[in-house]
Image 1 (spheres, rainbow, N blue to C red):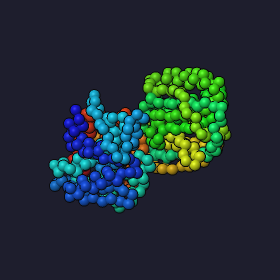
Image 2: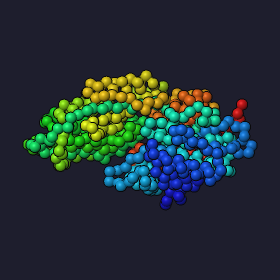
Image 3: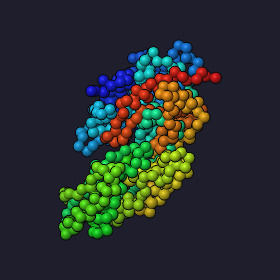
Image 4: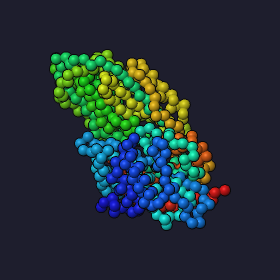
Length: 486
């Protein structure tokens, strides 16, 4: 079976088209051109703002003109992650999709259902004149995944609606009315490159096989973080022998739990067997620790070519100290909403950059602003103690729950009518753009829901096919039951 054979046909047809259009974060030109052509072909009013966000308007179905105006919102960019053995240029190549055991996934890459499936739903509604709805705006934001710059750049007056339905949630049957705020804390450590000593042999230590996942939605699952595991390996090696660091690289994106990391180190030949024992011993320990949550983890060591230069010893010591001590994972659970992660941090990426720079990227999330600031300050101070320059970027506010929301009540009632049971009403630890929308449009009444996605931001991202029909039916019923504007 192919994606174009799936039901509901309207959503999957547009989602297939979206998978054929490259749309990495900050490089959304092609998908925005696709949206422009979509609107022009259907003679729909559209508008693009200064940061690139696209808005397509559609008049109310006859008889629905007096309903509260609604905004359907999703983001057009996607997280671009792939397995190391997959050849893929996310700026040029389409996503290859696979239907398997009731799920839709990609072939070794992220699927882009986050949030392509939400965008596809909005397009399917715009395309079908038989669907009943009031005054409608479909708002497509850019760069949600790497900085929420589309939401941040939104200006007052661009949107006209009073209700906003965010289509970027990942659990069918759950209605979200709040989300965490977030920020990134970066560390920059300058080092001196030194000529490689002649008496050293080099080895590459590789951490691989981890699931990865969303650094908000999956942070509570006990998944392995490749950067933290690599830091632990290097820490154990450093206790037994001196080594020189030639290279280190792990993770890519602030909002993804890193799946792979590797470092090349030089040691004296007489420590070769001892290095293998240390790595293999720790590999067994980590495999036991992650047996239930991340059983595919692998830690291996193999010979490497000697580089011309290595990092100076003092900088290596500082980097190792910083990576080993930085916290990672859940910091605290909410006392207001059972089961909700309140505060977390993710050691997202470690890179060597041109100009003799070691870069450390972390991301923090919290539904309590003061706790977000606190964990960010703790991490920044730890970076400073290790000699790294700490900076904060891409900060965004949370979305405080409103249990008296009109659209929440309508959404819950529509779900009960269709399926004979109440949906769960929750807040989410992942970041949504809703908090930023409220800073510009404080009157907005908002809710977020969507079909079921799993392992987003990783190459095993997948969409549960059966839930798309439930989501679609629910969305159409919600639009049909929007209250009359007072």
